[in-house]
Length: 393
View 1 (cartoon, one colour):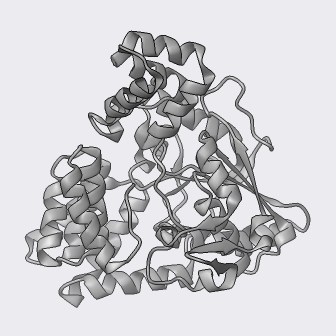
View 2 (view 1 turned 180 degrees about the horizontal axis):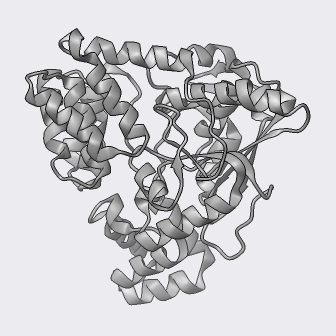
């Protein structure tokens, strides 16, 4: 089994332990039974000589968990940057955007919708979307999405850009035509993109599944694809890796954006997005007079200064300013640093607010990764009661 995991790692950079201690083994055993193979050694040989079987295994191992406007502030902020900064400096040409991995298309289409909503002319931007999974790309090209792809309270975009077809929602042709999908393996020697460099690269939530060597290789490739003044967007837990690799924070709150160290600075304030997020944070802080603590912690976290952000949260909580949001934020920060105490924070957040949606989702994902299917289902059901359609599958 270890040699099969090593084969996956060599070809995709995957650290199998990140998707659960027994998940890959369970998938391999199922594939072996379907292929009529008696032992792991024979199955590994089959994977090497059969492109079909290797692809079938990979499709089951790949993690597909996404939805439209996941981390909405990121999309609103980058759209504002595009319209307020990039567009005035470029009288001709197109803003080039890359979404990788693009999964089933929700992220790439969210970028397109955000740019359109911000007033970006459709002929002034181009979005490439790439993924290793042919199954995910088939879903993306189909442009039909179930309710699970729409989460959160603000679903106004669904009425503007989709039409309901039975129990699903079909994306309109205007948005579909703005995204170009390609299948590619980032770690293949044949890996290439449609353009040599991009102004924006969305490279979110892949690094957390890679081993250390693969993380370094992946970041080097992203840096080569990034234009001199471009922005690279990673996940909250991944920004420290990018900063360690030599990039610096783009100082765009809640986007976890990075840029080359020598690149020009981008606007640091996107009022509309920040006001809406500040409002959400204020409603969960207790008491109101200490609301700036968590705002400062979020700012530091976005700049990659996780230890300082965590220290603020710990002081805030130590002074009796207990709130679900404070424990949730501290949990995120500890999670990003690989601190096992993160789960304690999530549990305390849930104790203070049993209906804290984000905490329920994180606990469901953690339970799923740790192989505790019963706990994952429990947290998932509770989250679904708050926002129907939630799933970690």
